[in-house]
Length: 371
Image (cartoon, rainbow, N blue to C red; front, side, top):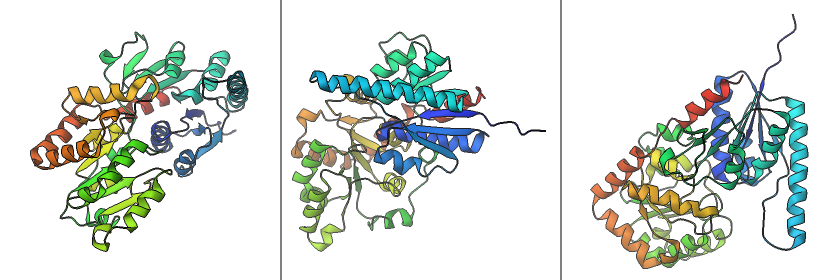
């Protein structure tokens, strides 16, 4: 008797950590729970390579995709060329692998695959991380089977029939985060006697946050230990500033362009997080961490501000607008929070209670239903 051919699932999450990490989490879970061929699709960025290379039984494929930019006719012409090439590539991949279902973590890179799936009549489901439905997901939702969303349905202005509140797609490690161990502190050579602040700007860094921290670095380090993910652009400056500190104070300042292997330890030992308000906020919420959110003002549809406002209304996070960001402002807010430990605990508690944490299981179950 011939062996039955395994069925295939496509998972597309491309470009940035907010799209790549949820797809990575889905792939890990599907590798455990389903006897399928998984094809993970991206556009070839470094963060894709870092995460997708860890998958044991998934094939990683890069496609061409164009991000629309205003500009000259030539720039727009290139965009449409890339969109067309990506569409043709997607048609070829669907016909080659015949997926039972295609999951799209909506952004510009998912559009060519979505159109190809529609033309060939293959089922699509998609997921929105933010409190405003992005342009790509709005388009895809018109023909997808289901649009899963991270926030409660009532906060969305769009009237989308197939919208389902699943919550975010979280890595399992963050849903069941244990207490920090000595090894977690040792990863950063930190003492357990001083408070720890984790400063993040997403996977690419955050210029205004970095500059603000640099300006008040010595004052912060006089009271706190800092883990600082700077992104590539500012890592040299951070390292230079660190080298100018006294040897004792240097120990309190850990800098990295991107925290990968030690990220879970960084979350576990942190007492406070300072971050942009992209989709990474859910990992902080699931980990019950007090957080100061500084929305990136140029994010599409200003979705980071919408994300931050949702949590602020739930008394689950503090907000500083990017145009109000100043070294004295952030220092005062940090000092104010640490002055009363109950404030820190209350923020973390409210943060976790404001989200669903089973989005991963909900979507994995939905994908397996198509096999």
